[in-house]
Length: 417
Image (cartoon, rainbow, N blue to C red; front, side, top):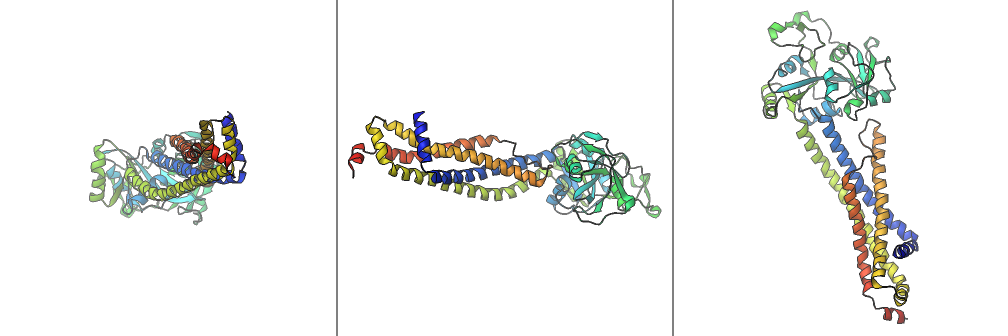
């Protein structure tokens, strides 16, 4: 306890030096913690949102763009695909589940997704208020979407063309009515407005009567009630399209056969969420590594500052320490005292770094809105390792001047002018 008290008093003898050291140390540690939390939470969010979706089928183009637009809703679609082509794919022996998506509209920046109730089942979402949509122009809001738009059951609104805020509004007769709000899931479904696909078609004036282009089921050989059960079509308009299809495999063989079949034998493309997101994380990882190097440089500078600070302090109090030795203080006691100074600086800096790192990730989540998966309340096991290494680094750096003190000749110090 005396050793701790002695070290603490010596540290506070130079408060500005102490402040500089702990701020530098805390800044470097904070950036490391922030990068760990951001990387883990981003990776977890990507995995969580693509769970139960093995393949995305859509128009040809960029596979990454198809995944980002159809699963994460952060990009524009590659185009549309014919409903009849998507319907034929659902009878493939490797397909267990197929959920259609129709994109193209938004309301105040929140995307309107035309789909079926199976989309809600993918994310294990439950109704919090009201009910799921059943009829045309009925919508069900995700928890974050309802909060952001300040809408409740019974409210009506008019969608806007395009997937970003600022598009032109559709006609007044194309009003959507809110019939339900989903409970929060922490997944992308919280940030969307959900409707049936017929509503998307109706808003874009695809409910016209095309008697001249009708093709019956007996002609096409396709069961059009399988993909979109709510569509009662004895005859199907060849203009009907959807944006993409979210597919779940029936067996592991599907991963080997189905993507190749779609890409080579159809006018559509198939993209694997697991593969594309792994590629994205690799790209993001390069930027993260740059920031990590920057953080470690700051930590190295902080440790060097601690080393210089302790060396300088020892020169100033070299005579005092020699007197303590003459009065009975052992070499080991003074050695522990110096090492403890380094550990104290490292401990304070580590605490500041942990707080700073969690505060930064919380601010990122706050800036992105309540629908964001980033949270400062989530802790990582890697933080414990980083904190331990931080404390050990402080101790190791302090051992260098402590060793110099340990081998110092007391008599020479006391007799020197």
